[in-house]
Length: 221
Image 1 (cartoon, one colour):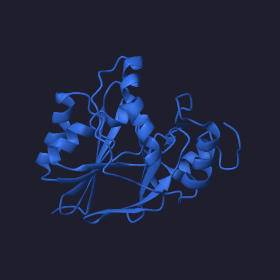
Image 2 (cartoon, helix red, strand yellow):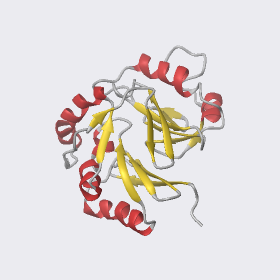
Image 3 (cartoon, one colour):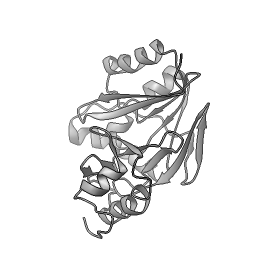
């Protein structure tokens, strides 16, 4: 018997980036932040999708830093699907090739978004439905995707277990990051599970209590 909502997490590339595949009971799926760097990492993702008899419908990027987009084109071409992100991430995609040189990572050019996403848009694929939050700070067009029915949020690199996204890259802003976490992420119910762009999952309540980088009532970073 198929379960109505499945989450698979894969960790790829030199940055240990988390790629997610979310599927409904009929196998309709969304890929979030495909970070595969080469054919061997592609095969890990593609073999899982084949074994589970999933049908990917869409790629979502929480943001477009290099480690989150390295597998965009491979997944888009494999399944004939589009990628979507926030419009403010287009300059980040344009910088990705130079960023790869800085980090010494071979670059796989990303597809461009078929259409961009604004805050408040509901993204629906099959039985999957996600509310979109605009949470800039780590990246200028950073988004988080929330499934209220399953009480989960895919936070990208905004909020981690015991940490937050870095703010020393082009387009980062520490005040925006604090504001995004305090007013958007921490406004979610405490039991919502946070699936981050790096590291293990956590909950909103745990981070509000224990994450010393951003407290619910603190204005600094």
